[in-house]
Amino acid sequence: MKLSIIGTGYVGLVTGACLADVGNDVLCLDVDAGKVARLRAGEIPIHEPGLDQVVARGVAAGRLRFSTDYAEAVAHAAVIFIAVGTPSDEDGSADLSHVLACARELGRRIERDTLVVVKSTVPVGTTERVRAVLHEELAARGARHRVTTASNPEFLKEGYAVDDFMRPDRIIVGVDDPQAAETLRTLYAPFNRNRDRLLVMDIRSSEFTKYVANAMLAVRISFMNEMANLAEALGADIEQVRHGIGSDPRIGPHFLYAGVGFGGSCFPKDLRALIHTADTHGASAAILRAAAEVNARQRTVLVEKMRRFFGGTLAGRTIALWGLAFKANTDDMREASSLTIIDALLAAGAAVRAYDPAAMGNARRLLAGRSGLAFAPSARAAAEGADALAVITEWLEFRSPDFEWLAQTLRARAVFDGRNLYDPAMVRAAGLSYFGIGRP
Ligand SMILES: NC(=O)c1ccc[n+]([C@@H]2O[C@H](COP(=O)([O-])OP(=O)(O)OC[C@H]3O[C@@H](n4cnc5c(N)ncnc54)[C@H](O)[C@@H]3O)[C@@H](O)[C@H]2O)c1
Image 1: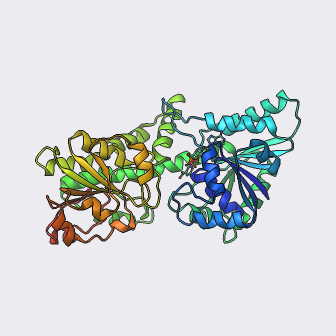
Image 2: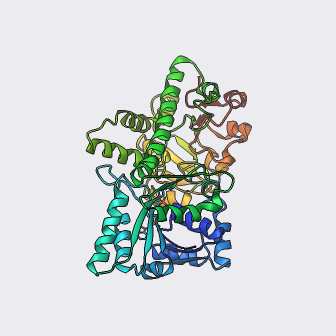
Image 3: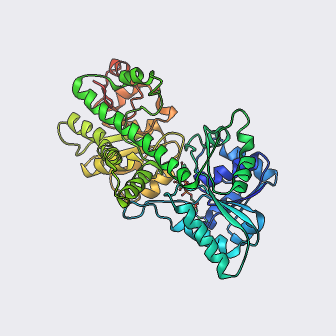
């Protein structure tokens, strides 16, 4: 199938590359000319494991191309995906300006019957708005092509995006047109061989499914963080509790990790957007608000632990920070908890020496001009001679550090484990003080 993908970010690039990998002829468009130039030069603008190989295969086979030209995108394909960003607006609602701008650009140029599929995470009703914009632009120039829309939200996880796309748990397709359903069923057939993962539903339910899924996951994390804080007060260990409850099939073992709060490009903004939607409709968002509130508090618990350890003040201390990305295996720094933690440490008069295997470039840009913040070339260099170590992201390379060496180099011999990566007994056996989340 010939396909055009509008927006070449974490979702658009993975979608385009994976769909090319199974034999489709894909054109990826982005308004960011710099990004398109890098892609054309064979560079992958984001850190996403395995993506470079999928992109390279597609390009080499001549099935994956990059462009900034909307005319080329509409000429190329009669099935077009919108995968541009939907960041938070000032009032918390989803900013749909990019999605609607795409629809306008497409509507101005479409010259045949076309299916436009909204893959971006958008509030209920947006796919209808996209259709209205498309039809408005077609009508304005007297064009009579049959342009339909569908919703196909994306569920990939950054860090596992290629795998998630190639082996999805489910593929949600929201349609009100049987032909659109058939087109998407055909397109996704290669990812659907082992069992039917395609769930066809109405457009509004499809749009809503995405928000409800992210809200459920965000609530789960905040719930565990709240229980972790209570576990500390009770002298219980949330890690043991996690195993204890995760073995119940009604609960399941995933997404039960206590830590420094959730971040990233999806959960915080999607939670805000859903709260805004609920407010707009006079519906309750009590659970959503609680999840957001708990998360905001959770981002600073590690700093409070450090402050207490250092007798009430962090002034003059140097804290080594391992991990900046909002989670492992990505360079994405959007709403990362590390940003809040760094600002809190600097505000308290501490110096921060940070290291991340992939997110240093993005972190440097986002944190430019912060005095007291330095970036180290390695985990070891960050820790060397610092007062204490704080682990913020669960990167594999932080999982088994040399605790004997840390005990020698950290002046206050303290490890603050924001992801509960370590066995407290093992850390303490090396002569270090250990502080996790929700552990006695
Ligand atoms: N990142 C994720 O893990 C993830 C997962 C599932 C769903 N989503 C959703 O997918 C959407 C995209 O997210 P992302 O993380 O890929 O965003 P991103 O910011 O990485 O990429 C968006 C891209 O769209 C481009 N763009 C913006 N306006 C454009 C326009 N008018 N025409 C063409 N290109 C334009 C930008 O230049 C950018 O490259 C969002 O709605 C997000 O909520 C993201």
